[in-house]
Image 1 (cartoon, one colour):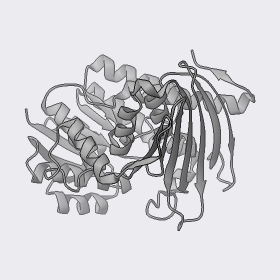
Image 2 (cartoon, rainbow, N blue to C red):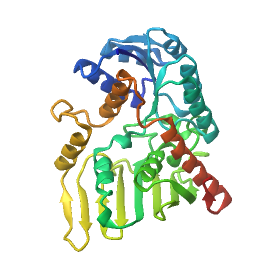
Image 3 (cartoon, one colour):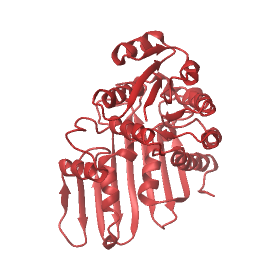
Image 4 (cartoon, helix red, strand yellow):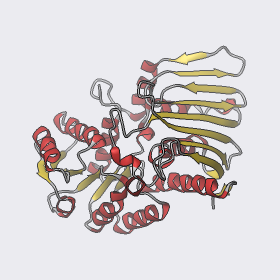
Length: 354
């Protein structure tokens, strides 16, 4: 089936998704039509339209209400997600919404309920679920000879995204962003930890504000206990050293094994099992294994492994009339953990997830 797409939000992240949609269309990978691009800033909308060939629109409601559009991408600041998602669900449109879904857990729950009630397909931009290195790591972790998972040590280190390549000035405004590094950035990390280690039983955490933007924390230190008995520690930082690489460092400890990653998407996996010597799976092999797991041709997807593949898989699910992944329920689980960490910081003690 043909999927006709409209994109709302022609900012930083919208550029990535727009390029991905264009790649899917130009390479004729799927039966997709790029119909409309929308931004309140008419110049930005027209700029996207010139590149894509889609119609430039300044009113998001016009995109959502159009009978010529089947699916909408919602790539606007977080506080605006809820209204657009509820309208899209009411109009029977399929939805791709960037993360985080909303500024607070109550709104997320309302959005999930609306999508479920409307029976529309809905995905969320938890892009690390499509990470080659993390997907291969997850597969390697299924080796029963490793014994029990003991702990995951996770450090997320990013320069404050109001500067540098992001230049997302709205992320320092709590009324628009909702919160800081935990909600806005490390919701990815919480989702990855749930993926790797299973359901979370309880959390404890603290937040700190060094940059001075009210309600926008730039340091979070959290501990997570999982139903499996494993534990994890998460340190999430927004710093002001733009020249320092922004990346994730992950160590996964089993009773009889260790994995170490210093990249979050593409890169080598360092590992040691049992009494064997340490070894490294190089980036090229990680990528080969990932594409093989997905049944994709390496040549066909050359240069399309980050946001492009996320969008390809979402649009492919729609053309095949099946549910995309990660979906709103996946995001809801991450939001519940994020909310519990914030409540732990406020209460000064552990919070048990129900």
